[in-house]
Structure formats: structure tokens, C-alpha cells
Image (cartoon, rainbow, N blue to C red):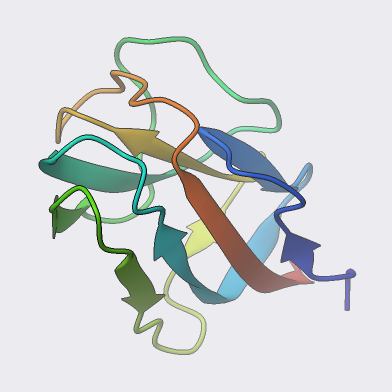
Length: 116
């Protein structure tokens, strides 16, 4: 099993795994410093962080209503062997739901996956 992905700072997103893999868990927070807004965590089938625009999502977007001054917890329930990236696994924090509009470096996450 690959090493867990662990944010070392607040991020816009990151590469959980750079080749085919199954996502096993993802949790974290949107930091209290982020402006009040609706944020969407996108899980993307890619091996690098993509630019803004259309992306190949591998699961529905998870919406988080965030209020500045309080952390917003991220805890995605992930059924076994249901979220698979053919190219890789990337998470991104977006201000839009159906395509990527990078939100800013406001999140920290921990994720685990298995090769596949």
C-alpha cells in the first residue's frame, strides 16, 4: 500500500497517487482563515494537479459551507473499491461544483489509497 498523503501546509489540492489507485479514505479541514463561501472538494482522475476548467471527476463533488473564523471538517465516507482513478488520484478545493475553479490554499487533508 502506498504511503498516506498528508498535507504539510494549507493547500489548494494535491496528488494523492500518481498512477491507478483506489481511494480508501480522505479527511481534513478547511482552515478558519478561508473566506466564507461554499467550497467543493473534487476528486479527479489525473496524475498531476490540473488547471482551472473541465476535469475528469471520479466521484460527485462534496460541498462544504464554510464560515470564516471556524474550521470546517472534511470527512468523506468512501465505500470499499468504489472510487478509482485510472490515471491517478488528485483532490482539489474548488469554488464551483462541476468544473475546477481553484479556491485558494485553504485546506489540509490526509488520504490513503491502494494500488490498482
